[in-house]
Image 1 (tube, rainbow, N blue to C red):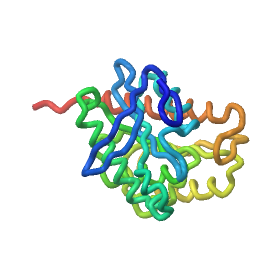
Image 2 (cartoon, one colour):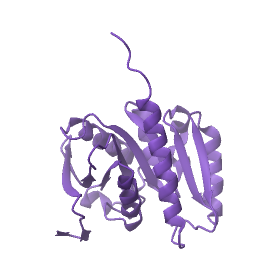
Image 3 (cartoon, rainbow, N blue to C red):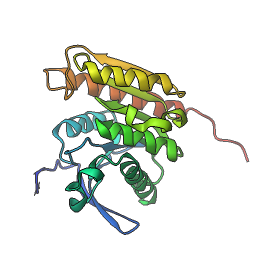
Image 4 (cartoon, rainbow, N blue to C red):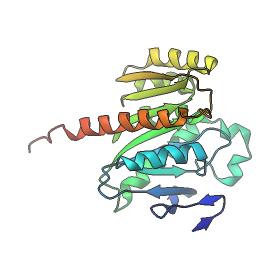
Length: 229
């Protein structure tokens, strides 16, 4: 089925996330037996059709994770550069999406994780800090976690920062943000990768690292015994 700017796979479905009067476009896919769903936060100028994030999403689905790729801004907001870099606004939209997932019959029992790219990583960390309930992990790809600023101190979810080995400025920003995180954390440097991970094999490494992090921490949470009444 052809839609707008791309092609949907047979396991994907376009959705409209209606929350507090907003209508945000998304693409959701929930593999059979999925117990977690990953919400993608794109960087500035990107959307639910991001080729790189769609690639990572497909790889996550192969390990049994659901995915939601969404536009965090309305078409009108996308034309306002101040909104594009409004990290708190983007974070609130991620929280809306998390709440929307919790309201759907097919996904209400699922744990939620965030995958943020570029500025979207800052928004993902702010969202995780503002409303930590049901967030089992966060992954940043070539992200700007420094944009989360004071929220970094309050992030509880296990956080993985993935940075390209040739992305010198962003490596430094990630290391500074890493030092401020008090949650379970890890930083991975992908050799030979620049900011967009366009080099052969580098995005595949991102997908492997992200899949491992999400599945490991989803399993950790599932392993916890339920409290007895």
